[in-house]
Image (cartoon, rainbow, N blue to C red; front, side, top):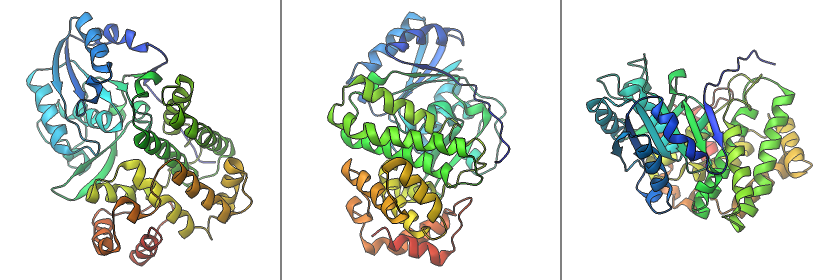
Length: 379
């Protein structure tokens, strides 16, 4: 077992109507709030109204930045940070899924400086302070509501990468499962795939920690069991709550204790697909993971077999991989590149982007030639 430290400063509020606490908590940070959200879906399901009622009741002066994309870009980060800096905001309220909250994390450390948020990703700068961030989650997927990491993309340099710093933990996160009732079936499925992928990245990372592995198996099993139910009954509170809690647990640190660093090779490949073709993040992972497991089957046979037994009751590594692929297909996720509209003529473009982005696992390495072999398994 690897050494580890447990530290998570985020205060997480989970359950029905927890938004009622938002106003008083915002008020504890100040009176000027930067409200950040996506393209407006929160205005169609009453979430925007509820948030605004809380901010108004707190007598907050509100500055809004909307339009955060599902694959977030640095231009939005910098524009929102400029708005916050210009108005000397005291707190950020981010309402949305992973893209909005990820963006808000970088906005929080960019407001106090005069340079682009991308400078943190390119190692040109280190954050010294941050504007407090409050997250209101509307999509169960990334686990960003309880960790210090953020992923954005920069098309000018052709990169999509992650960055993390202790100042980027949300101060508070509000998770009401009812806020995910209106999430479409495809994005519900992509979110489930994403939380499973987070578990797998840590499972196949460095170190051996049997209790942590059991946490991983349990979270994946919960997701596999609840997935068809939540897709069949999208407004069932208990099913939505189970998926929301699983997504948070999957990347809150619980799946990494004693395991050292996760691998994250699959995510790095998925980021390239999102960067090039705007593939939804979860969909990119269901394309890559079956291929990645097949590619590493020989060296990871015992681990894959143990995982399959725990989650699906399978008896071999091959059956475990097939079970994961079938599960992803059954919930409506693509498992091959052509299913995402990406043909074989794109192979060279993908390989070049993988090389440019330094695609690599932290634990399971592969050469440029092996990149090509892995890519072939995605078709």
